[in-house]
Amino acid sequence: MTPFVWQCPRPSVMGIVNVTPDSFSGGGQFYDVGGAVDHALQLVAEGADILDIGGESTRPGAAVVPLDEELRRVVAVVERVAKQTTCPISIDTSKAEVARACLAVGATIINDVTGLRDPAMVELAARTGAGVVVMHMQGDPRTMQLNPTYGNVVQDVSDYFTERISTLTDAGIARSAIALDPGIGFGKTLEQTLQQLRELQKLQSFGLPVCLGVSRKGFLGQITGKPRTERLAGSLAVACFALAQGAAQILRVHDVAAHADAVKVWRHVS
Ligand code: 8Y4
Image (cartoon, rainbow, N blue to C red; front, side):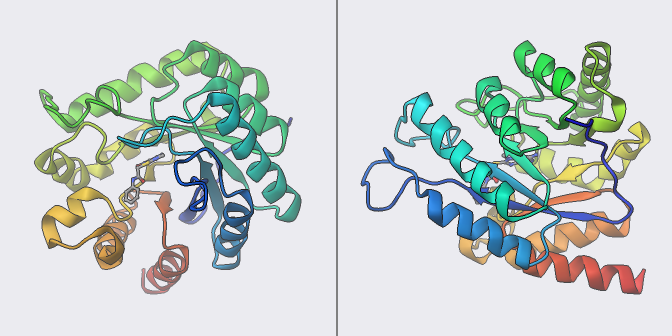
C-alpha cells in the first residue's frame, strides 16, 4: 500500500457510517450490512470527502457481540463500499485485528478513539502506511464521564499529542500520516468541552490536520435542551466557529449534506 498522506487544501467532511445491529435481529447478533453500504454511498453522493465506518462496541449498555461477528460484518461493509467508491475509507476501531482486516479490503485510514494505545495498532499503522486519526480520551469509554479531571484541559490534551506524535513517529509512522482530534465528549465535562473548543486553534501549532467530532453530541443537548435528532443547527454552529479560525481541517459528522453546504458557503465568504 502506498503511504497515506493527509492533504487538506480545504476542509474535509468525514461522514459517519455506523454498522448497527439489524433491527430485526432483536439483540445485536446480526449487523445490517446492506443498510450500512447504502448509507455510505448516500453520504458520498451528499459530498463526503472521507467515510468513517465503525461498529459500536463502545456504546454503554450495548448487546455484547462476539468479536468474530463484529469483525466479519464491519469488514464486509468496508469491502463492499471500497468496490463502489473512490472516497477514502477510515475504519473507526481501536482493535488492531479489525483495522488490519479492513485495511486489507480497502480502508486507508485508522480512526482510533484510544489514540493508538495498543502497540499492535502502532505497529500496524507503521507497517502499512495507513493514515491515522489520533484522538484524545481521558480514561476508557465505560468510566470516562464519571469525574474527568485536568490541570488545564487544553494544555493536557496538547501535552498528550506531543507524547503521541513522538511515540508514533519513533515507531515509524510518518508525520504526514497523522491527524489529531481533541475527542469532544470523551472524558470531558461541559465546561472542559467548551474550554477545548474556545482554544481549539492552539492545536494548529503542531502543523497537523485537526479532526473535530461534535456532531449531535451531548454537550449540544446540554446547551440547547434538544434530543440527538434535533442537534444539527448546534453542530453546524460549532463547525463554522472552527472553520472561521482555521482550527479544524476535518469535520466528523452525521449530516453530510448540511455540513458540505456549510463548508462550501463558508469558503465563498471567507
Ligand atoms: C449521536 C450519536 C451523537 C453518536 C453522538 C454520538 C469521535 C470519534 C466518536 C470523535 C473521532 C459519537 C468514533 C461518539 N466520536 N472519532 N468517534 N472523533 N476521531 N457519539 O469526536 O459520535 S463516537
